[in-house]
Image (cartoon, rainbow over all chains, first blue to last red; front, side):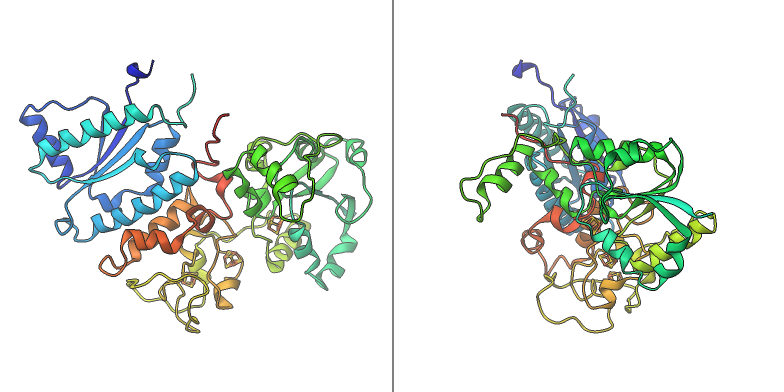
Length: 139
Length: 303
Ligand code: SF4
Ligand code: SF4
Ligand code: SF4
């Protein structure tokens, strides 16, 4: 059973770096796991913690937020905000009995298609180890 | 003709009823206009006093508290059935409030803590006879029955209650104010806030006029609904959010967490330091609204 588990991941990527990085991975024909459904936002600082909680509530096994490297944010400080929000959110998830590792924040630039592929592969493997989210509706 | 009213106490601390009594002289004008058909919190009414009332025969019903066990749920449904208009009275009834933070624990853990492990207990045992069955976790009352009016506050402030009751007596639906608490707070706010340090409530002495959040205190104003008259910040104490979420806020805790994270100066406050200062994330940001949050309870470990 455990071997068949394919985690469902929501990727929330910033337009300027990580989404462009995903685009680059795509156009360079790099393969990455199909488990991630990507949503594009203008900035990782736009990622409202309510979106993340909603994704878990709807049964996501993991949420990957990706933005520009520190210092590179198109809007100057958005990624620093994201970093602090995610740190607090992980604590909130812990209190709710959800493994905080299910929420990941990574910096991926527009030229780092390969890094993006590696990150998603690692995340998928880690979630396979963890198993389905405890909030997944039992069918 | 007096207006028939009933007050149902579910799982609660009685603080909301206490706040009603804090209306003092206003009660002298109001009471003669009311015919109280059930108020087991203050007089010896029994459940059958409600059960025998014809359905829809009570003009206004108030519920204080949430459903912690099957008896609470029975009384809540009964109250809805007997009343033309149902008012959710206080934050326990509206969002869950502080006692429903117990949603972070399982019933077994809670019972064991209270009846066996508490420091004052000697040879404790968990009562199992003549007690109603506990519900697994607290849900907001509105998930069980339909309400006509929500009057939040832990407890609701007397002027808010007076306003609501007097408009109900005039036959009008009270209109609650809808902005965020900061809009009614008299403290002085600047355009841009950059927090060099986040403080716990006991650290230092707040400046008398400046916005508390700007001074680094975790004041829930930006994520909270107005209506209490901003009593806490006016008295020098950061708002804890007891009026529940402000307009367009789905999850009060997530909203405030987000607001605080975006106000801190990233060069002065690291993510680790922020987490360390806040300490109890849910107890700080979702203190009054856990059952109404996007994820309303902890995922209890299955035995
Ligand atoms: S809302 Fe607050 S004051 Fe009212 S019953 Fe609940 S805990 Fe007590
Ligand atoms: S954050 Fe608090 S102190 Fe500042 S304006 Fe809002 S309610 Fe008042
Ligand atoms: S200031 Fe905040 S905590 Fe105090 S009564 Fe108003 S809403 Fe409640």
